[in-house]
Length: 257
Ligand code: GLN
Image (cartoon, rainbow, N blue to C red; front, top):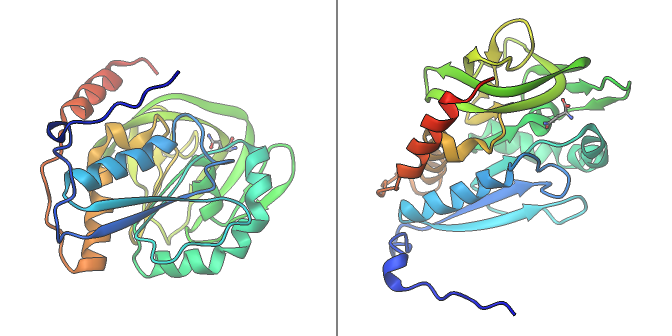
């Protein structure tokens, strides 16, 4: 038998404050594109939106669904090549809308498999070329060498970023994007240039799972701040509880590659 725990009012210090408004977070393709805990990114956004005093609405979009309106933040996770093949046609059908959102400044976080497909294409190591939607000026080539392990990178925007990578695709950046950071541990986009991830407009793309946002709240708050400013003209921050994030960062920084 399951019993439902009723939270006490004291256990909900993050209750939405009247007047701050709603932020709608859309998770893309969680059925196929959600590995190594990527769904946690949406959960972190939900919690931190509450801590900032706004009301979160968490939505999912899967193959064949109606695309919801009025989305404020888009997040997408990683997946196996087989999952990327499953979503490819549907993603192309949504490409124009997603491009409009990205070009218009909507904050987005895409990880690994969807990072690759937000680029120009992913040529898998098995042969098939999966076309991307070209929001990011990057291209990805599958290799026989999987890049696996813990990663630390330096970024000017968000400080040190920590996470975990596991990918066969190696991504190179074109002139239309900036790297998210430079690795000090691990591989990142590829085994050659030391870059990790990509930045375009308010899109943050990274290979890092873990999931990423619990250990990197600065990125979560960037997405939330940007969404609030776009929607309401201003962002009034709350008081997030960062104790666990700090512990997770300390722990992750000590882990071997
Ligand atoms: N299937 C892709 C690759 O292996 C993406 C992997 C992932 O999302 N972790 O490169």
